[in-house]
Length: 305
View: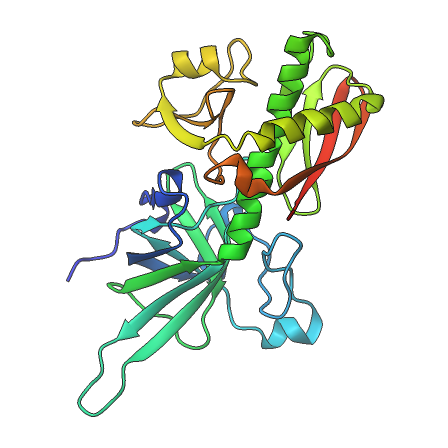
């Protein structure tokens, strides 16, 4: 029987969602399980207190209050050897779902399942990925094999929103090449949260250009370009990707810098999940353009056609 690591928070989790974005179920091994309250304060601060009765706008659990907090199960944090659960980051919320352990039946008994409901997922600089959630009763203990299953509709929504943000970036860069926007405009930050998605650019984009941005986005989506994930070295990523300025600190690992490419028309350094092709986006809705202190913000949403 293998011993759990001395420091589970230093144990690197293999992020399968980085290479297999359409993998929605997976069998993995439990590395550690700890009460949230036992973790260092700076680690606890990464999470919102979980309530089984309420969900936030992004699908993550909101804080419990009053009597509900007193009766709620104690949140626990699990680490596993590899995971399909996307950890919050890069403007994308984390996945939710379940991890299930099945105990072998004793003579005459039925097999028993213990289901851990995953509410929030966070990553640490050590490479550990922490899954915070709730057990219905007693936690399971290592070594245990777990069946992971993510919330597919929520993952699909997050992937559509994230890819749609890159499509808007591609549309703006296309308008720059056409001469409709000045070359001084550059990609900046983005948020791909449901009901609060936007992309920002340094430089002034007139609000009156919103219909032109919308029609350009529609043209790109209609091409149904394939969305591909590559791992490039830093020099190539810096030279070919949009939104990468001189001297930008590109994050990568032994595989390189993770890049999302839209049918060869444009690429971005990105750690998020995405659709397989642009036709899966449905309708990308440009809701408006606002400017403040030299930054232009394009808000958007996705809808089924």
